[in-house]
Length: 312
Ligand SMILES: NC(=O)c1ccc[n+]([C@@H]2O[C@H](COP(=O)([O-])OP(=O)(O)OC[C@H]3O[C@@H](n4cnc5c(N)ncnc54)[C@H](OP(=O)(O)O)[C@@H]3O)[C@@H](O)[C@H]2O)c1
Image 1: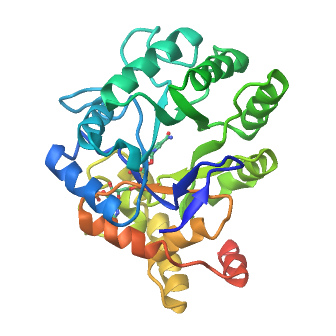
Image 2 (image 1 turned 135 degrees about the vertical axis):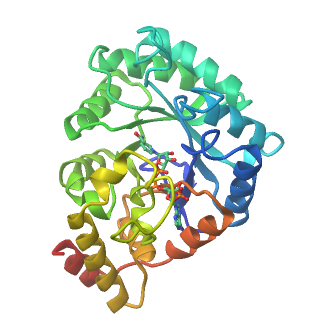
């Protein structure tokens, strides 16, 4: 497994990570244990969760962290654990966002559920327009200084918010965010036009989410309803599985096939051929999927192939 530095920091993450937004929901403890064990076996050490994951499961919000906490017992030190805060955890307006009040509470909740005394990467899940970024960064800086959090990152920030956060942290001498999560895949390449250069200029590592478009980019879904999985059961199906979506998939498959590769190889390989991408955090339902994803992540496209693909 290739390890990459997360942005300009010294934190090394596995280039294939494991997303866990299906933990506690679609995966019970035993199914999640098998997936996590296989991930470790394959060299995956970077695990991404969030306080909100598990929403809708019998454990409720926090379920993914709680399940992960049970599964990490006795081997926490072998993983780099990333989690997030900021989404609505209840009806209460006090249990969401990126205010000092909520951050100080949210981190305690996550530490308890994860059964750990430190979080490797603590991420603002989504921008909070109600809270000044300086308040958020100062609260996170306090957590870094206290040792509860090792590094800080964010997710779903626009390019200007990435720059604003970086300059605020630099000018106030606060812990700088080292990573940015974003929806970035073969189907959402356009987002990179603004956000990726902002990350590059400010030394942030990119962590793409939905790298497989919830399974669509594995090629298992076919026009006419073939293929079963979380995508076919979710509201995203209508957005993604359109006639135009299937045409694009066919073009991607041709491109990959002409180079002796599969669509899955292209989904991982195109992301990991960009040095700024630190870790691709796909979720998996089974150990077979974990193995397939790690194998797919070996392809590095040449500069000429990257250029040809950009024109597709
Ligand atoms: N920051 C944010 O706002 C944000 C938002 C969304 C997600 N995330 C993070 O990103 C992670 C990944 O996102 P995601 O899981 O929603 O989307 P994804 O990684 O694009 O899709 C994963 C799903 O695809 C299927 N799959 C995976 N590998 C496969 C394979 N080799 N062959 C066939 N099917 C395969 C599995 O579902 P089935 O087996 O059911 O088909 C799996 O759950 C999340 O777990 C979370 O950590 C972050």
